Length: 604
Image (cartoon, rainbow, N blue to C red):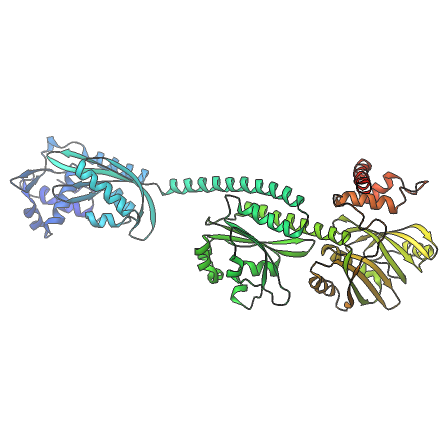
């Protein structure tokens, strides 16, 4: 019989022992074939067994444990070559391999497909223990138990396990087996299929579902947090509510808020929930020169941008806190800066048990939380600055004209700020009383080509020693910074060579931090005086009820200073609305609500 190309060389060589002899169909024992091949009996037995399964040879037991092999007569040989080729193609196309274990002989046989999945060459001869060792260490007990139960009881099995190839690659395979009896032989026969691609798709879908669940939960938390924060009246209440709402979510384990000590750069705890004592144990700092300052918290303070570690055990910068990760049970974390109008009010730390948490969509929502909390803290501190009688008065001086404060550059005099309204996007309406400045000087200024930070100047009315003005300012450096810190500008005095600015801050606020921020605006800005005093009673300040919103206060202030309440009216409703950048109906809605609250406060 001629050489068959479909057979591997070692099997073709084994088959030639029969085909090249004078009596091809004569039975031969395993030792006889092994002697002609100069090969071990065990290896010869495996080759002969595969040739039988391929339909090339026949076999049977003789005596107690011997076996003979022979080549079938030509008329007795079915078309096994075609079947074998079809099997080979099917295994390749389906990433499938077949296997068979002879219980009596203890011999294991793999098809080419099984060898391909295990990553071994075609000449590899498997043994039971070495075959089990291919499975992932965590999965070996499972496959061993399933196989042994099948051998002992005949119970079939089908399991999905991890397999490690000869090259160290991890694949997912589905392994099945069943006990059969064939020709007097007790066998366990089965197949394994490479399902790595399907497992990856399943994990991707599961991850997407988990991310969607997290986002849905997080969006619900944001809605609850927004409502809760708006209802709080103090900064500690806002911070405590934020941490409580986040740590109560199924997505996160605990949360904290901290600020930075301007002298030591250490992070100072302000609120914690679900992790009492964590910030003390963590010993965080924003100093990049110290190991504890190179983690996400320190970077968030320095960059004012979100920092995270999606797997703390794989993050080299997180090494100082790995023991804490074990103690507090988290695998990922994010630190979100609490910022409003370029002012950093602190950082918010959020921790999760999930590896790979804080994906792109999740980070976008969390960044919004930082803005919500920052806006709420700024609003509360501004309201405290307006309503508090006990204030710290700070005076600053800078050389040159007042254009850097947002005041007209060519005017000398004193400008007493009666009301400052933020219109958003860096725009302010300032109502002030100018002393020693006449309307003629202001009208001359309005005819100039441009004034730094001053978009418009309107003389509202003349006084005995000056006039009352409305200034529309865009991004005035000092005024913007003071407002973002929760303070208010009280007076700006401009002389020929310098400008003096007086500002008020709540006595319980971070006055030292405010001084540092203001003096950093301009290189020649210096503080002249600091004293605690009682705010002078002016117009409507400190008489406003706490329930007034920023929009309602703005409508009431603008209407008052523009003469809307005078008789005859000096400004119409549409004119006031235009100055505020809102529609007439919106202005009247805010104004009526403010009037009602103001009257309630008066008559209570």
